[in-house]
Image 1 (cartoon, rainbow, N blue to C red):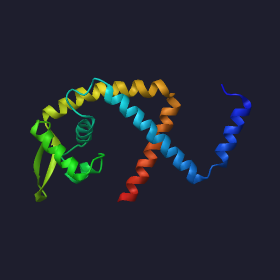
Image 2 (cartoon, rainbow, N blue to C red):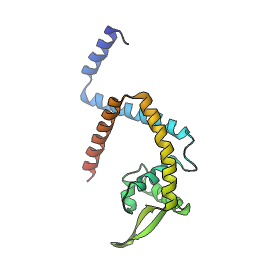
Image 3 (cartoon, rainbow, N blue to C red):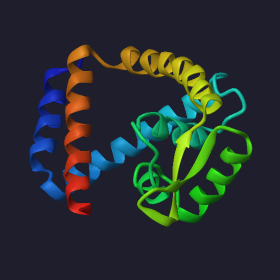
Image 4 (cartoon, rainbow, N blue to C red):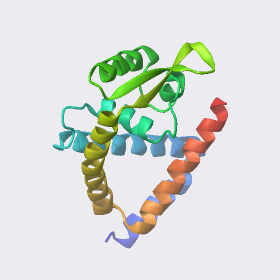
Length: 164
């Protein structure tokens, strides 16, 4: 528990920050937390021959009710288009992703998981979810988890609307 004088000084410092400074401090905190958690997750023995980025592609495809265009996949992963294209090639070669012709555009393709890709995603995803839950519930209360979910959802919604 902090001393009353220290807490009062912290509160005064918080109120004296400009909105711009507060936004940048919040952004830095978000990135720092993300980096720390990603390092922790990467060190866990749950990936079974996948990189975290490959898993991200499999996870994203697992949430799609039907095959999607590569450009749509690219909007949901943190990879450049050329890097994603190479990764999809590797995942196709390994039997985790399949390409099918786009029925509405003969030149286009759509991507989806194969049965093997779906099984791998579920196997890795279940283990990864345990690690995520352990890390977040070990640091945050249920109320804080709800607030984090709402804040991140709001940021994602705002960003997605601006991209349309």
